[in-house]
Amino acid sequence: MDYGTTEFLSGKADPDYCRPSGLVKTEPRWNLLPPRRDYNEDIPVVGSWRHQSSSPDEDGYRNSIYAKKPTYIVKQMVSSLGQRREWNFAIVVGPMIDGTFSPSLHPMVENLHDFFGWAGESIYDTTGGEGSALNGGWWNDKAYGSVTVSLKDPKILYLHVTTAPTTDHLRVPNNGYKVASVVDLRTGDPIQFTDIGVLILHTEEWSDVEKFGDKVFKITPTGAE
Image 1 (tube, rainbow, N blue to C red):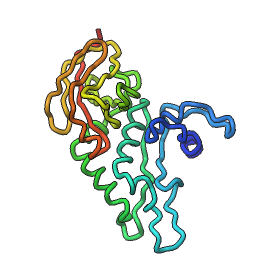
Image 2 (cartoon, rainbow, N blue to C red):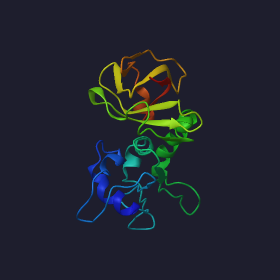
Image 3 (cartoon, one colour):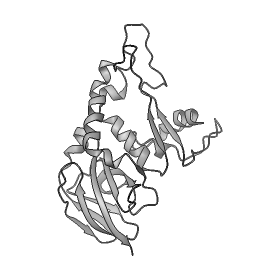
Image 4 (cartoon, rainbow, N blue to C red):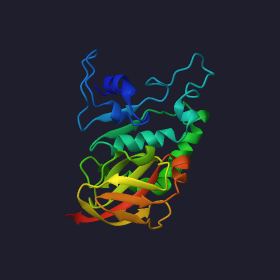
């Protein structure tokens, strides 16, 4: 079920890195249903589930999107974990026989290492943001993103912007909660915001999206109205 659903339905993803957006419809041809909330998503890295090469000397990962776009795996991971509620995310990338990663994947692995160095709290011990105080998905001016929620303190939300807006602000639908503070998770700097039923973040700094694949805001609501 996991294999078939991911392979045959994720082609409808929009944006292309957000596999959950392609997994919401039934596929009549294969009699596949949308995944349940406890779905375990395994991510292939070469258009298949295992390293493939035509000869022992060929790097089967070199043509993967992860080699071409090292930040792509962060975008996939964040959207898979943040668009629903209880999904798992498994990166199907194994080491070579000597225990090292394929050289073509080093940029991807290094980017993951750098990202988790400052953004780990927004991934570990969190659940997806479906039904939380803020709505993930398409926002204003071509922006797209996801939401994760702390399991230790459900009032703490993490807003993940994986496609930046083309303007100097971000508008995120607010489900009836008041926001007390917004902080740039990487820098710790407070972010100016307006809370008028829609949360508006005022910032022109989106370089983290280009560098890491995700700009993360730590958001603390005051509680339900």
